[in-house]
Image (tube, rainbow, N blue to C red; front, side, top):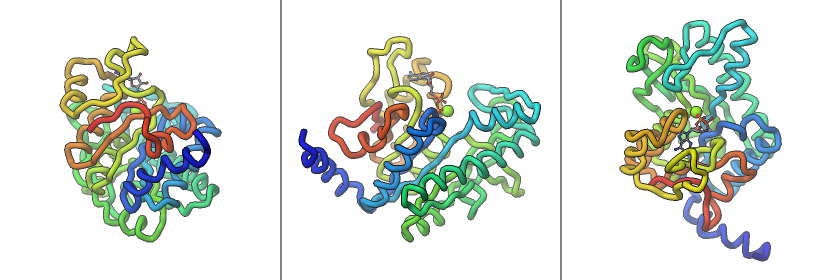
Length: 280
Ligand code: ADP
Ligand code: MG
């Protein structure tokens, strides 16, 4: 394909998504590797400059675990969720809403965008209550409400919101919420056109042990079934649940793509082939 053809292939997608919101869950290798980080930031800035309203929701598990260990605490997980006692919650908030969030904001701004870093406490963006279904795992939150008004205001003024998933409880206490879950709930609340999740695998495999079994597209019903029958496991569970919730709430497409591939986001949004697994 000539360079002109490559560019013109993007035109229908730019037209389709201009003025619309695209929620991006940023996590995995794309967050840890410097070259991949820069590529993601360029993609997000490009989205902004072609008229899309990107909203970035980030994770930060490895950085939290590292900070915990430096402070002499051993990370523990139950059903993929981090056991979060009061001290761990403080560390989560310091790292996620502080260092990690502002690091991403600075990277985006270096690429020529104006990004604004927020946590779920800002303008009560993410309200949560204690997650109780997995026994006592401390300050792990279940989202009860999303108040997205601030994000509309920021997007309308040309800013790129970058959100860490520290949520606020009724008494002002902090909760640690899985970033996939927040991304899904946020895409629904914002009426986003797309939800895109960057992760460290190519997408959803029918059988994770069989690398030829990547599923390119499935319905929310089939996706749910894969969780029920155990084909989707571990960290993929909240991702798939979030995609299903978003699509059921009216988001046109939710996609899980390989963040280890540079510019995966651009390829997914602006090419005919796309990437990864699409749920719609
Ligand atoms: P992230 O940091 O992006 O949130 P996670 O490790 O939480 O990534 O979730 C992705 C992981 O889910 C994969 O690395 C893989 O080990 C696991 N997984 C379980 N079942 C599947 C499946 N059917 N297809 C793909 N990945 C799966
Ligand atoms: Mg995860």
